[in-house]
Image (tube, rainbow, N blue to C red; front, top):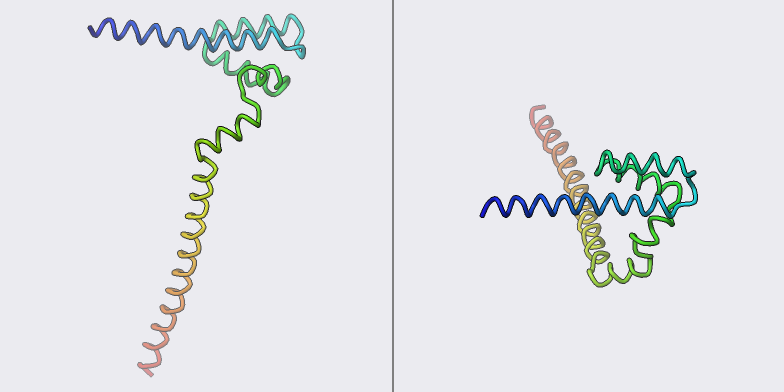
Length: 130
């Protein structure tokens, strides 16, 4: 039973790695920013160092020709806005920022208050001794 689970996990990982390599290779084929030699060299890197090579090549392609990667793999801004609205991520982010701001104001107020009361208490003690 454990052997089947291990084999299944290994197959899943291999498929994910191969998918990432195929994505990088597909983006290399579609780009017009690189020469044929550069495409072949980067393709070799992708397949010789599967995960790291693919991530490096995709990162380079995003910087030099972002439309090649974004056309297929990154949703457009309209979809992103709708998705964030549905998930409520903007509201959650706003709530976190508001809570952080309230915490900062409370901390500043408390620090200012304790700073004044410490000086007053020390002054009272010194005055009482004189």
